[in-house]
Structure formats: structure tokens, C-alpha cells
Image 1: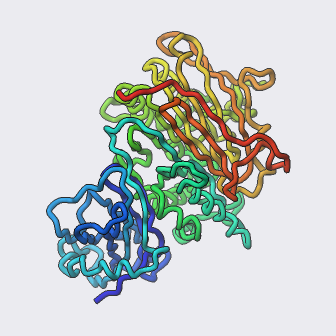
Image 2 (image 1 turned 30 degrees about the vertical axis):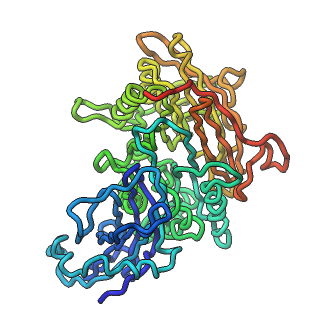
Image 3 (image 1 turned 90 degrees about the horizontal axis):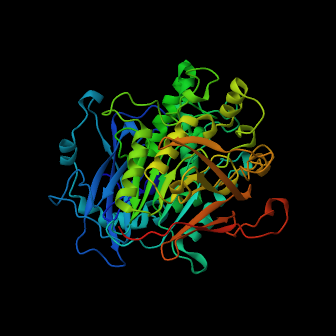
Length: 565
């Protein structure tokens, strides 16, 4: 009989609901690299070991496939799926707001059949003993490599209570002897997620881009540039296999979305026209699907963007990278599209169409409950080089904006989103971003109508988990702090309801220190609190990077009150 082994990577707790949780692992068959052995199959084995501190009444153990086409990775959705050899006729939903401990292992099976005669699920299941025989073996595996802990989300119909979550981005891998430093911040992050110093435990972790750096220097420097399957695979194994990150990801539901460094620096669709960039893109996305996308919600078919809900709070994770198009008309920003080209038929909605429909639907069904939009690229503040008041126009301005890799290069997308917010009176929109290696908070103000002025829109940026080159980019003085101030002019004009409107903003709490941000939402006071923590778990202070002490980087932001709808 085959021996049960711990997973090579994982487990990762992925998409979680009130009644289910998706668990990801990678099995090992000793065939690292692109040459996946066709005569071996890897099978995952999973079981719930504890439910709210008690043993389950019945041992439910399941087999699931670890697919070669996903680099021997796979997921099993507890509470929703049945395994290859189910003992029951229907899955048993998990309980809402309940603590679970699960155990996961892997089996290696011989499969001498040719690839085109691969075994069906049914035939494969016939080769396996009853899954329950593995329960004791699962519990004997090392916890660090086989145990996942999580709490299911509150029921969607429960009253909107408090919510706490962690957001962060940009984990540079480190060079030579500094690779351990890139992993250090995830130890205090886990402590904070569990609720240190009397704070509530966090419900989830948002990793909003650049989980790996395929281009360790940049795309113009061949050193450290991933352009083979093995190199992309190695990036993920190094990141997800590091000590503290692995421990974190098996104890907190994690939601990930890519940005440019999962592919190459400042990537956009216009590069696919070049054969070499197309090849790198295909390799990068194959790796991304295997290691990040597959354990997410994947609610729009094969598209990378997605939505989910934690209790009464809705989230939409935008793919602002693989669907961005520039230079259809050279040096013309109006023809740039951040979320895909405009749809030509109602039955073929673009990502922007789906996002707008989601926002309108959330406002209709959930009222003024905060709505979180995960945008890897920063919605606000803008870089000083791309501000609207900068001298220059036409082709010069287009080149400046496109070089910043931010929202100013896509005015049509931004206008459509703001127009919908005003026309549908979408209240309490909060953007969550990363990318720029400089955390901050921005408060947007809309003018042009009484309805617009009452709307609350915020932008929170958390970046970077680890970035050792603050002198290279991310300088706070490189970003607009007040779009109305002289020398910083950066208002954005758009039309809503047939009338001219304008967006301005104020940004503060900038820091270049390695950080993650905790977000606390309190419906009782209608406030959102954002706190920046450093790589020792300390609350960061203004001026800290320059050796100065200042005010804690914690902000209480007023929202419009919301009640159960």
C-alpha cells in the first residue's frame, strides 16, 4: 500500500464562506520542473479533525486529485465537494462562524497508462481503499506540513457586525543572504491576525499583488528574470515554502490577485504582440493559476477577477493587469482600458461591466454597507509625474501617465466607475491597493451635485511586505498629498447624470517601511480604522523610516452609517 506523505507545499486556506472552505496543497512525485512524470499520479487526502474544539461525530475523509496540468497542485472544498470515493451521497456543509482544524496528506500512485488513456475519476477510485483508513495516518503527519486551521465566515443573512482583515502586497524575495528577511514580516502578521493586544482576530488576508517577483531586478536586466517553467516554479516554491509565510497561509483564509511582477515589470496586453513576451506571459499565467488562482473563488469562469462576501461585507478583486490595453491609438489616453476593451454585446460583458453591475447590485441589496474593491494598481493618490495639473499636454502627458503604471493612464475606466458611483449613489466604496512600495490612506471628495457630495469613497494602500530599496522608488514626496493644493493640482473631471462632476482627494499616513495594514470596520460607530504595522509587529509611526518618532500610523475614517437592509 502507498505511504501517506505530507504536502510539499501548503496547506493553504483559500476561499471561505459560511458553509465551506477551499484547501490547497502541492503534492510531490520527485519530478520538479516542466517534465511532469506521466506514469505517476498524486492524490490528496483530507479530513476534518476538530470542529469547534470537538471531535466530529463521524470521520469523514476524502480523496481529491492533484493535477499535472496544475503542476501537481489541487484543492478540495470542504462542505461543498465530494471526494473521488465519497462515503455519503451529498456533501455536508460546514457550520457558520465555526473553528475547524483539518489534516491533509498526499499519496503517490503508479499510472502506467499513456496520457491519452488517463484514468477517469471512477477508475482511479477503484484502486484506492476506503478513505477513512487514512485518518490516523493524517494525524500522525507533522502539523507544520499538514494541518490547516480556519474559522468559517458569518452567515450572509446575519446582521452586519464588526469586520477585521489584513491587507498587504509586494513581497520581494531578497537576494543572497537576505532571503530570510523577506519572510520575516509574516510572523508578526500571523500574531496580529490572531488578535494580539486584545484586538479582535482578523477574518481574512488580502494579498493584492506581487506575491512573487518573476523579475527580481527588472525586465531590462536578464539577471533573475524568470523566463522558463522551472524558474516560475522556483519563485512560487521559494515564496510559499518559506517558514513564516507557510505557517500564515495555513491559518488564515487568503485571497490573492496578481499584479505585474507575477509576469514582468509594468506588463500590459500590448506586449503580447512580441513573441518572447507572449511566451513569458503564458508561462507566468500557468504558474499563477496553479499557485494563486485555483484556491480563490473563480466565479467568472476562467477569468482571473472574482468577487466574494464575508458575512454582509462584499469584495470585488479586479484583474487590473492581464486585461489592460494601451496604445491602440498611440499617445491617446482616452483609448486605454484598464479592465478590458469595452463590450460590443450585452451577452458578452467586460470586466468593467461586471464590476459596475456588482457595485449597483451591492448598493441595491446591502444598502450603505461598505463595499471593498481590490485594485492592485492604486486608485488614489496619483504620482506627481502623472497629476492632471502637470505642465505638458497631448503626447507628452500620455507618456508620463503610462510610465507610472497607475490609474491616470486609464481615464475612461476611472470616469465610468465614478459615474456609476454617483448615478447609483453607491455609498461607502473602499479601494484596497498595493504596488507602489509606499503605504498611505486617501479620502476622496466628489463634487458637482448634492448627491455626489454625500458619498464616502476611500483608498487604502499597503505596500510593501518587503522592499529593501526605498531609495529606488516609493518616496512619499513623489505622490500627491492634496489634489487642490498649489503645485499638486490633480482633480479629475467626469460626467454623471449629464452634468459635470469632479473628484479630488487628500492623502496622508505615508510610509516606506516594510508593512502590512489592519482594517477594522465598526458598524456601531460607522468608522473604518486603518493601522500600519512593521516587520516586528509594531504600530509604525510617521517619520520612522528616517529615524524620527512621530504619530502612530493609525487613522479612524468616518463612513456613512449603514444598517441591515
